[in-house]
Amino acid sequence: MVDYTYFYMRFYNIDWSEGLPPIFNYNGLQFNCILNSKGRIDKYKAIDHLGLCHILKPGEYQIRNSLHKAYSKLNGKEGNHDYFGYRELYLILKHLSKLYQFDLDKAFIRKIEIGVNIQLDNPAMNYLKKLKSVQFTKEAENTRSSRSSSKIYGKKITLSEYIIKFYDKTYDVYTGNGRVKLPHQILRYELVFNKTRTIKKHASTLADLLIDESYIALTELLYRKFTELQFNGSYDLSRLKINQLEQYYAGRTPKYWLELVSRNTNTSSTKRSRYKKIMRVLELDQNKGDPLLLELRTKLKKSIHDLV
Image (cartoon, rainbow, N blue to C red; front, side, top):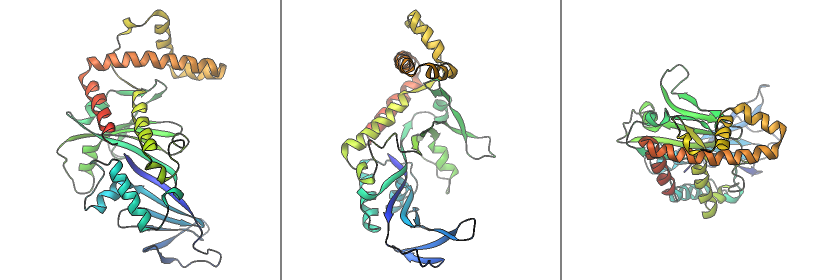
């Protein structure tokens, strides 16, 4: 479930006061200097055999990249399209802490990506074309394979503290190095936290990720954010009362929520809570009538459950 991770340790083993050479070895890695705009050494960088990027700065040691891919490489495989649950996360974190001699409880998370691969019956874009927005306040954007390409292979919603991403993992793997054809249609769903405030109460260090309650809380967060998404399609509005119908139409406009917050925060929270309840009822009804959405919700929930 945990994929890309950017963590750091407070680091005082190297004396920077007298200057360091452009290239030097540390922790079994060769570090090369990176210059700042003034031509001075700003930091040092190394890439290890697992594809992890190591950065050395005064007082800080950073490691970043995909833990899932690192685990695959450690076991003679490539990519992050297969299963990666709690056991696999435990093994790669224990391996890294022993290899690079750091304590997991002193490795602080700065950025993290949690996600899951969902095996589906149809091409991923058949499902993704239906994704509209999150709570009708932020529209989903198309994701292209490159800036110059017209090929759309995913959707994303960029919020203030994290990004919701869905994309065709089967296509992503095939267009990557090696042109590997997967035997299944796989949809990748992930949350990318560029700020850790949302997850800090669950995990602030790598050691926290291995605590059962914290790990389970992150899997629940993954599913809860999915339930906040809206998909294209008609709703059975006859189920709503007059006051609910008024709230439904008002809530479809992002401007409505912005104006409501500026006028009264307490009222905004109450109405948003009511609106979410209305949308949950409509979404569940809609999913029952749409086999693709019903399959997506059912298999995503099972895939997340199987991560534990």
